Image 1 (cartoon, rainbow, N blue to C red):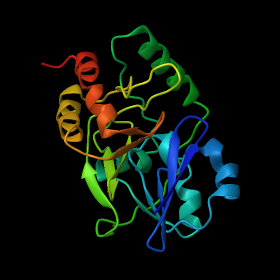
Image 2: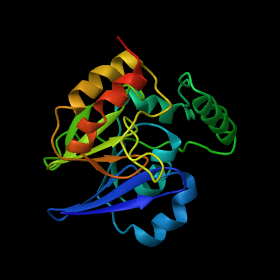
Image 3: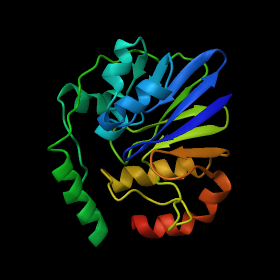
Image 4: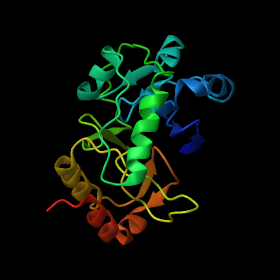
Length: 215
């Protein structure tokens, strides 16, 4: 199995080749269109982790090229209604800065409508509902690889551990999702930041619970 990581304008997406099929987990923002045209060849299936524009921004283009697309129904309403969704910020100065920045940027972005497909029976990919960042967030398991979208942010040069996204739709629901993620063993591929292991996640557990602040 081959996994190629694409660091896009804002988010991260992944191209996977396995058993003669080509998958994309997310497909970047509309600003990544030229790069996708140049570097992403013939995609059979796209699995979108959640309905934010920086993760689903090229879905319509790729569908026209023949790809079939899965997105959870609870996030598909964002696509149907062309909503640039920015969940409420957490109680930190940076999260408010990010919230207002994204609200400003969404004036220049657009959501292109696409028809979703029923891909629940693709044997190579297990779909796991992991809400919290959004109501329809999903994790996609391929072997021992977990593609988690924005449920957690991966390490970066400044913060060396996985951590919470600053944008959370429901903290109590996210708590249940995190309890599930802590049970998984393998590698985690986030929608922002670097790949991390289940060992890295367990080491960061106390920091994550402290930041979530849910009883």
